[in-house]
Length: 176
Image (cartoon, rainbow, N blue to C red; front, side):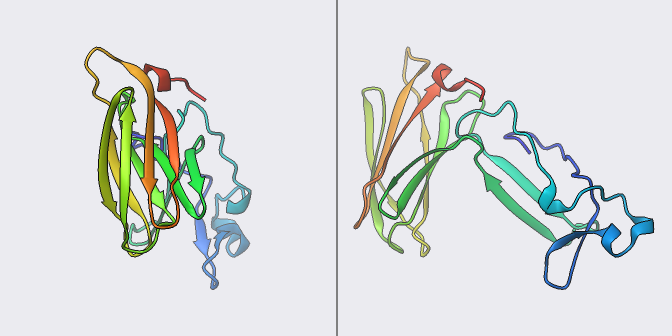
């Protein structure tokens, strides 16, 4: 699913799960009843019309809807790393003004000092890292009289200080 898209796109299934938990074509066990054309590990998706930092969601659901597996990826990520810490920018709206900065690799439960700037407008704050050393910080560009520009987000933990820079507004609309 592309950001904001709730359509489903079947990927040449159905698949079954073998005893090891691996997805397999049903035709491997029931050739007469299958429409499976390609083994799941050989399925290739083209990623078109995505913007930088726009998430791509994958969801596998059992036919009865009781079992689900979910994954999120970024075909064109905007990231910065310092030591074991990483910041990832995630686009949140079609106006290219709302983002979530996801931090990972920080110390468990540490208080992370943050700063976010859009042009000359800067904001300092803190984020509490989870027990896994992660946080998610929403940021929004709302500058009177401006419709695009460059933004920066920095996070300072005990052992790292990553800073990520990204475009917002009109400057972020370029399709990859």
